[in-house]
Image (cartoon, rainbow, N blue to C red):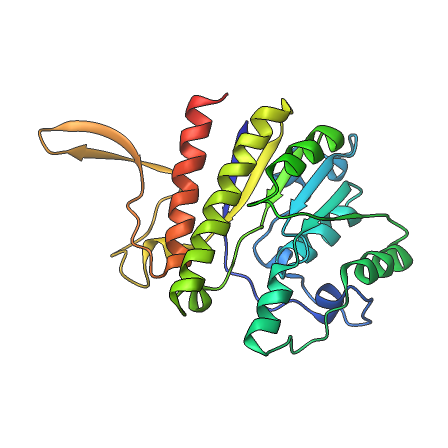
Length: 256
């Protein structure tokens, strides 16, 4: 089991990526903004002139997941979009809607096929609750990589009420843990790509540049250690991202 953590700040997607319909405008996609490409997800995929990869995008109906799915499909990879449509349900709960109309998943997938000639499969599945179905999906699809966006993504929503706090923790942490277990139980050697956030280190309180990956420190008593950078989450959502990192660290160490 291999992990790749991406930490990024995304801009608002263009209409073509948000709705799934073609747009005559030429604009830089959110993926280009933080330079996620087929090489980082599929390692040695079509973009490098070799065989295409099978990639499952969890949370593929979301504002990060949908552009990622389109981009990887456009690069020639075989993409399976997985989502439980929770973001749409939360919008309904809050009595709001996207500024840009967002079509249903089946319409989005069909629109992409019409403008690109490429097929994408959509699966309605709750990663945090439907573990057996997740394992079955991974066994059947045998992905080379799994991109994990399947989390409640709004910091303000995660702090709104006790109900939203509990939901955010239950959904995000259980989903990440289920994914790690599912990869192990399916016996499929897949890369896991997870999107992190700078908010795990607080808001302007880091005191300086934050190094990438692990850092070497001297603990009390002169003990040397190699640790994750200390976290200081600014919301329940950001706290779940911290817990995600610890889970991935654990599984990478103990379940090779």
